Image (tube, rainbow, N blue to C red):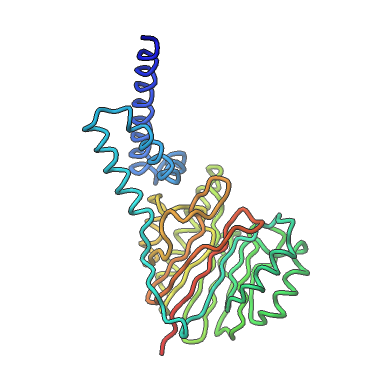
Length: 298
């Protein structure tokens, strides 16, 4: 009798928790553009769906099956990737990586980058006096480069083994982004908006997305956009950014790239060029490196 009563209490609470999560996820999608705490909730959509799936056993069968359908749809969309296979002999590679400005394993990370031998490196949070020696080593192997070289998490670098037609650092207020143009007129953008940890930074991130999206949309060349976006594809703000910039995802939405919450905030986006992107194994940064291969023209 006591066990039956306890089961009913637990089931009742699980149903309410599931309904609460569903309500929050719906509200976050509807109001994220205006209320930043709700926008933060959107990034945990997959976490919420998995929790709802676990709670579904507390519902009556017809509601349980409805929740299963909801979960299957969201998870399927999250795992879907638009990337296609490429001809291996006609590709070039980009390794994008938020290396973490406070990373204490600097020499190890540089060895990791050199061992991968990508044609282009697009690195966030690397620069200034803390990384001077390591950057010098990288530039010996990647002689064509430009970057925002400051003692700040917003330092960034594009380094290439290939000659660059152009390499420019642009700014939205104090926050940089880099545009580099490769032979065959392919443009690479490295972006890193500020994290949404308070109202002021949320405003700065919105402005950064607005200005970089407009800049990218006006780019005539085929485009690849890489970097730590401090946003996920579950957010209406992210969707507005890629629609304005006229780019699309190369990675599955759910590709985890930031610890400890496994959020998919490091992205690869593209327009008018075939690419394949895949995450590499975690190193000592809290972000995961992403390797992208792009198809060359004949």
